[in-house]
Image (cartoon, rainbow, N blue to C red; front, side):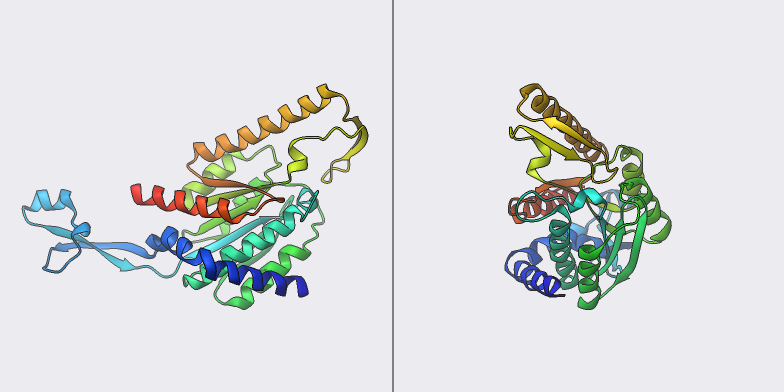
Length: 288
């Protein structure tokens, strides 16, 4: 509880200082649902004029919108065994909990409901979207204390779960290290139905092996271990090539389905990356 409390204080401060406005400008457009056309009246917002209908009718018509109910924000967090890794300040899981807290408090201040899905090799826990701090603090606690029975990663099963469970369109933040092979189709299907934003969490030590002689490398999810001679430059280069290829593949998938995304390291400040992400997202939505 102490960790949750510390995280809450930090997240709220960050939201108040720098984040709430940006979140609001990225996601405020969601609250409007097209209702009908009506004739332009003096004092109406000129931006709402629909030029196609106006041309057809020969007189200005505007689009009238109806306030939709608040947005449902789902934090889909990967708690597979690989997320427990952290070589320096914090693990990927702790990073996920902190980012989730910042997003959740921003959503709360925007009047949105927040839900949580924890997944590893299968969906583990689902908290349906609800309002209030209690839900947020429970979510943060659940992320930090999750110990999945099956340690692997299955992003497809998480996407399927959300598709069958969420009735209305939601905003899904997917926090994962994306160390899974089958992500293409499931992400494509999810992003067509729900607005999907991906946050790829990584640790710098995972992307390049330092030259430290012979070490035992362990795969947390499958339990494989093998001795690797890191002083061999071919080994280091081959490993780097492999991780780069995986990174590029994940990025290509995001790009293909128009999923806004950011890569966030456990060893650096995540706020700049989140700021950039929301700015890009707001720009893209305003262009559409």
